[in-house]
Image (cartoon, rainbow, N blue to C red; front, side, top):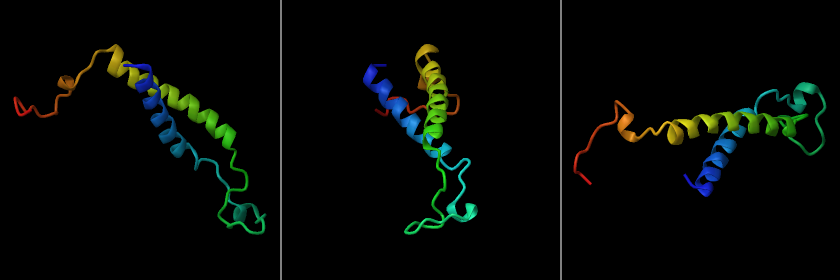
Length: 91
């Protein structure tokens, strides 16, 4: 696996992990009772984006390491998936 493909896969895993991590620990301005003028009451009061980006980086590194090991290091192929149908010489 080349470096460009590796970085692309890591980037995809990082963004997907960020979208999973973003909602954790969010308190809206309405919940805290401090709605700023011109913002929606459902806007986050303290989004803590830097903490969430750090957590995302650690989690995505672990997820990517698992993906990398299962594909590259172990040498797994599509033939190793037991429920994948075989198409023979259809191609």
